[in-house]
Length: 446
Image 1 (cartoon, rainbow, N blue to C red):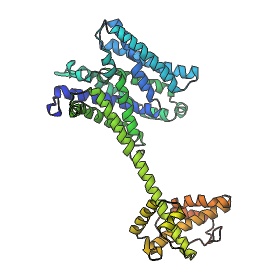
Image 2: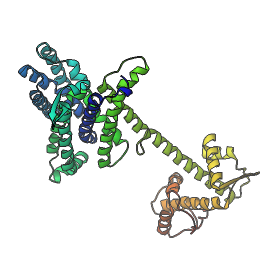
Image 3: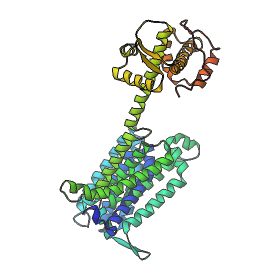
Image 4: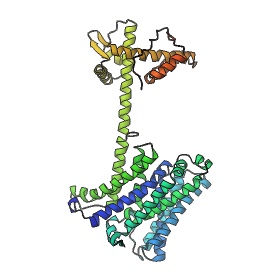
């Protein structure tokens, strides 16, 4: 089936179920990520299997209420056991979670295999979900046939949203600083177990749509991707819900379209939704404006080129200041600044474009504008050397490398404060003149 054959009664409800599952999980997943407890969401989503199996043994059916209660109880016990093992055994929190959820998950699998012969239970459904069959089980709501899973997930999403909104401050403080939370009258342990309760409820509600294994993708990956995009919690929550929703929508369309490119029929929608969350996380990790790998690399490279450009005009200034006969060419700059030929030539290109440097027969020279910037760069360097020796008591042999770094991040305001702190000296510790401050000079290092 392709996108052209989209049917709302089937595909529409599948997408709605996926979106609701993603949003309900992402709302809570943000706080798991911030608490560095992402594995606990995974642990609970796996460890509820014994509760599900026990409910099946007792009820001999897939009745929602016994299944829900059994899974939630075991989910809460997972959080309790994890904390108990961590405290009593003095082991790492990740190790305690691993012990609890693998043990309970294994017990649950054994119980499910035994229960499968007696009740309508498919282990594959437990693990991978059955979101494709969502539209088949409906409830009559206001005269409309609405899938039961959609109704349940709608209620859970609303409850999670109210929980996050009403306890936003408490969740925020207890996530970033549990000690401050407790001293402020907000018991961090209470917020922890409340959060675990809602995580367990959400895991159970999502059980039939995305399965126990894949629910963790919706609970962790969209918040982790949002974390790469922003440093503000409120926006992180919104972004995670949006990313999860888009992943659910694109995941369904990808499940029915992508396999056809390779000559196959459609694949598991829930699995493809999880794959799409991974795709969006990868995009966020690469291109995120705050923490993206490529963006951070480009930003660092641009900063390195800016510093090299300033080093070049500073070196040219000193050569002319000392009236040296050295020919200032690209090779001289590379050797003096220990820079690569490519970086040096790129910096020279941009300096020429900015009108700070010009190439003459005897080598590179500063323009009038470049001379102004070079003077203030050298001024900052020599003021820092003076300050480090006379005010900070730094050894004279170590001041150059410090001043070399500080000069690139000294704007006009900081330069004036530095000058005032050193009583505006005219000579640096090495006997070189300190250029005066130019009133029309733009801030550098800003």
